[in-house]
Length: 113
Image 1 (spheres, rainbow, N blue to C red):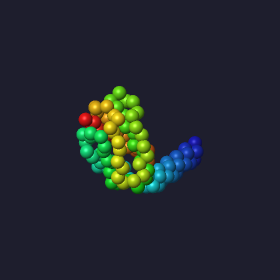
Image 2 (image 1 turned 90 degrees about the vertical axis):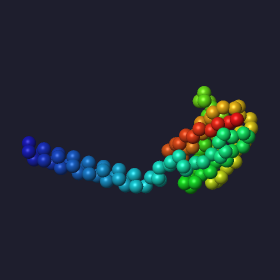
Image 3 (image 1 turned 30 degrees about the vertical axis):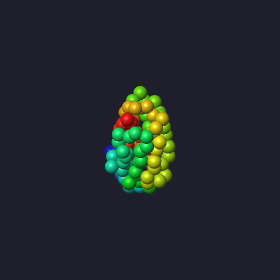
Image 4 (image 1 turned 180 degrees about the vertical axis):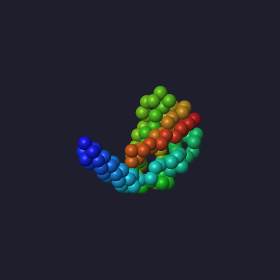
């Protein structure tokens, strides 16, 4: 019984060490986490046009705009550091702008006059 228990414990220790190493290797490859300052919306509040500045990412960013009812109003894929948008057809109110990249998302508030 003792030999079986010791071998089992050794195998369990070896497996857990291997899994820990694999997890460490995977997390080292991931891109840095996004923060709110990575995406700037100007001007806010907006009248007819606004620009989005991407400062800290080099991957394509998906931008989705939702109204306060949760309905998708607009969506685009951003590939440039500065992109101009036409919001003249939007109703006045508050919108949520969601930026998605590398399985991470950040949501900002935008007010339309």
